[in-house]
Length: 252
Image (tube, rainbow, N blue to C red; front, side):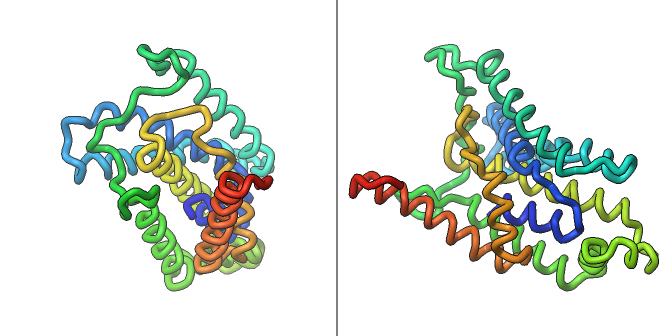
């Protein structure tokens, strides 16, 4: 849901963000770091701080390729894609260095504070607060894209940059804003994985959710209702396949 929304927003503006995976990992790094130092704060404070921190980290990772695109015309498909393995190397460097578990020696960060963990929505399930947060993000994005002047400028830029420029739209500012918002939402995806599932940073935190987001966004025709349906379909397909593999002994 998060990465699909992130990619759809960027693609609607004509900014081809292939770096949601790296932005997700940077959000996860921020969440793991912040989550260990907010133990003395109540959840109503700790959770928003961690979400905002993850969003800022994802946006910061998206900033360089966005600036290269708007200032020098460098293809963002290449730059965003190449930053994904760099983010993964950063995660592995932390997990095999300063964040390695001192007790077990495993390459995983210390567990985040209890006040920084997303509460479960249904007992004995993995459905947590991140799902509601994703639905809020998608609802806000749907409203902004379809009902506000900002959304009109973004859609016009994606459909016809020359026409949008002729109409007085600042193309560079629109692309930069779309890239940063896309990176921020992908960063929140990393927060959701750390705070809702893993409770720490691990090397296998994301099995390619950033790349799956591209499939979700395009299958959902770059619309927020479509993203929601596509994400739930692919998520159900993935979980169902693994469950069938375990219970029936067939290949996923």
